[in-house]
Image (cartoon, rainbow, N blue to C red; front, side):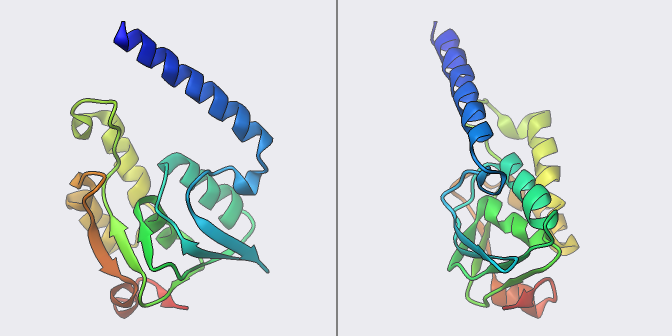
Length: 166
């Protein structure tokens, strides 16, 4: 009974979110707790606690990259899916920004890290990282749970040549 109710709830949630996504302008389609401002083709990230992976991919590819926008990450912390901005063609960061990495997670699936969905989503996230970070993510960061993080500072990424300073 509980499984049936949960499935019904998830289906209803999906339908409601899908209906809402149709009514939201494309640049705001990806729903997050992020605070961002877009002016003159520059998306400035001042706060971003992450969010869902696939809407983030949609936003990066179909809004930022399609419009040839730049990304400035000046948030104190860039958490979870926010770190995927490292894959934008024209991105910079403040040295003080802390990039906080962890793996994909689905609390509704037992042993999620052993599923094909975990593998697929891990690869989808990793393709937005510079090669050394991609390797580290696939080897270890992705195995961190939703409240565990591997942190790298903007200063470290800048010094390693992975991203330029803003």
